[in-house]
Amino acid sequence: MNKTESTRRRKLSIMLAAGLSAAAAGGAGQEMDAIYTVPHELDCLIKSGHIQGACCSKQGIYLSHSLGLDKIGWDGKLIKHIDAPGHLGDSAYAKGRIYGAFVVRDPKQRVDGKPGLVRVWDEDLNQVAEAWFDEALDGIVVLGDTIYVGIDRWKYPPHALCCVKRLGLDLSDKGNVDVDLGYWIHYGVQTMATDGKSLFFGNYGAPADKGNPKKFNCTRLTPDLKVVENMRFGCSEGFGPVPRTISKREAPVFFVVRAMGGNMQGWRKDPVNNPPRIRIEFYEWKDGRFTSVTKPSSAKK
Image 1 (cartoon, helix red, strand yellow):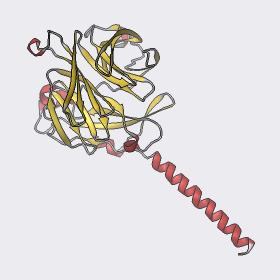
Image 2: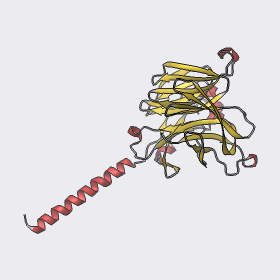
Image 3: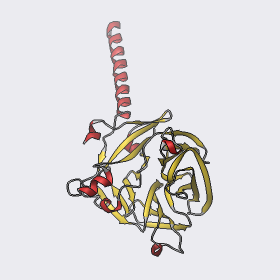
Image 4: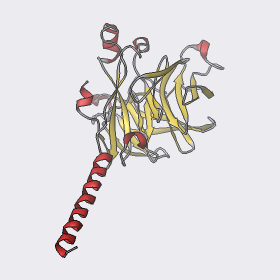
């Protein structure tokens, strides 16, 4: 082989390697298709209202609401529905378990008169544990050996604090902590999620003239419940981290529940032609911000 041919082959090899690296990088950073539920598979939402919270595993996405919990596949099709005894405000996934936070408003369904309930299921939605509490519960997330649960202490009137209950993985009560988010909200924390390092709280932010001039509705916190930053990121109907086997991206990716068709106001007006449907969108968490990685065309279905 002469020197010219050797040089040509070396350049070709370098170009091929660069091309493969670029292709791999492109594959890792590809946008994701939005996921749509099937019309009429979630018609229970006509009565229950809307999705209250969500979580996911490799098996699928779990959608909680006031009438129960629905498991859909990554293709959007309904896999299983189970009934619930009250308002299932949020759900969380950790190590093969689904955790749900309830407020049981019907006194006849409470245990020892307690309205708060944390219930645990396996990934096939078979119940494995539960514990009752004196407070009305909402958002929930698991980080490490701690379960964090939101407490709806102040109801709708705007307030400056949120209250968080901490539980052990055995559902033992580790006490409550009041957290000043730096802006006013309605109710308690609606949805919770984690990237494995930080906690994310999704809230119903109060209006600007009620203590929330920057319209914040999401907060990132440390595991010991210290506020890191506030942001505007709508996630009050459910969000959570996506397994990397699904996202195919290096940076953490979160899914977010988006209601279609005008949410419950639209569904209830014409449930035959406008049945409850949910769109799942995807956002990458990187450099302190959520950025959509949902294919624009797929989000317009």
